Image (spheres, rainbow, N blue to C red):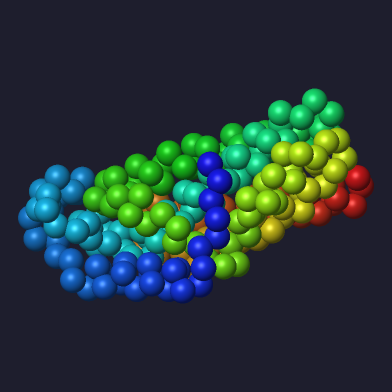
Length: 201
């Protein structure tokens, strides 16, 4: 799934919409899974589960971010001449992030949020690759594919760490905070590993 980075104005407009929805929404009659809410009403970023606007934003933004990381991993893992160390790293990234996507989609559903309603809400510094960069990765072979993957994933991970640190500063949901802590620790370690691999290629 390829996704373009949203323009700054689009991000600001989407963020403002989320903030206004949070101010206008009410928890009256809502249950933990949102089934008690008025079906005609707009989904609230506040919920009886304790999720805050920051929690919703974190999950909604991290899902497509993880999806692209899985896509990048799939691209390089399909190459027969990939460096074995890069293949191992790509496998670990894919195997870790794919289940986290499902977890965060479950949170949004439990919070009464529609993931599609938050599509495109990305920061300009989130490290997402452009369509052209993904195409370059697909076209590359061997050492070039390894290099492009590592360089792209380092920037991608740095963006995820920034997003997770923002969640730790602003979020309130215990599960979302725990995932943010895990992302910071795991992906920072992988950034260090990828930088070392780049030096050895």
